[in-house]
Length: 241
Image 1: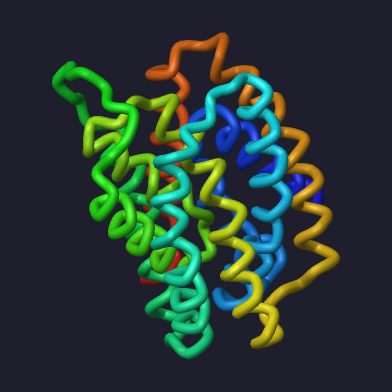
Image 2: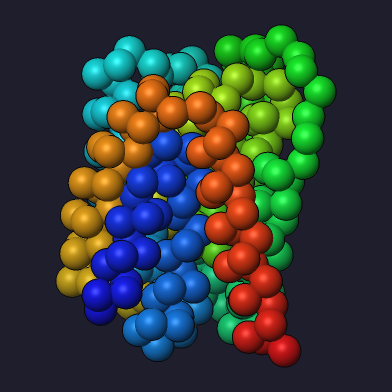
């Protein structure tokens, strides 16, 4: 349990700072608690309700929330999240394990790749934003990783600025995980007590992470988070085989 709480703290710090820390929780719940991938995804989603609330509050105080972009993303993400959670309930465990491993490793590698400097945009066309939200909502609920781990890399690839991408991920996280939790809860795949404990711990760490985002170089934070994701992804693949 001590190790699990430590992972929750690290995840919260990374969620607040660079938006891609939630992916650490599902594998930790599988390895350290022995939950099956379905219940791990549901419990992690419940935890993300807390981190989303805290993250939104933290970024709102800094007046850094991109409301238009977030609303468009949410229009696609929220209903798709319910579909992803329902798919999780019927998918074989090995499929979920490999999907989580691929998502974790792929996100880490992508964020470590060098990029050409270019002007940052603050939003996306409406149709594109809704479609991006739908893909993120389905994939994040399927794997129980929260929206940011998929959304932030996608927005960065579309030339959205890093701070805007992270702030948008905080905003859409709440409705996304709410829809996912409704589906997971209906299937009895949430450990509410454990998820609440981890949510409180991670939520407190999100505040510190959001403060770090304004003080430390973003590229250094992203490199550290991405290297962690690569390591976890490799462990997930090796543990499967």
